[in-house]
Length: 174
Image: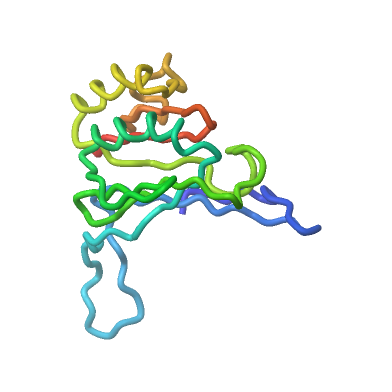
């Protein structure tokens, strides 16, 4: 756990705290209260996220932004349907982009809910290539003056925002 943001959200007349947590490569999971258990074991290498589904107000417009980005990340198209697509990563997780008639209002990352999507990039070279092409794909760079360490000196990442205001953080694991 990295910290707690006290009373960060207000919903239905009640305030809620936000707990910030992170796991870095090399972290270990402590095994407690088990007789004769090892003091620690490596963190499981399985992927925790099964899939993420993103709703859009205009599928055709944002497809032109998301497709080249997903291709650059090595994801392959897994399924396509009218006003929807899914891309699968090599780890088995997948990302869905879909226009839904249930979408209401515009995206605001500072509202309760998901702030941004963080995706792994295989290398710093690949990150630089994506950065070079992202504007042509319709993405805008955030924190360009701090690239590639806007998240801190030990964190290598590129922050992009699309036409609907959705932010992606592309991370190189060190």
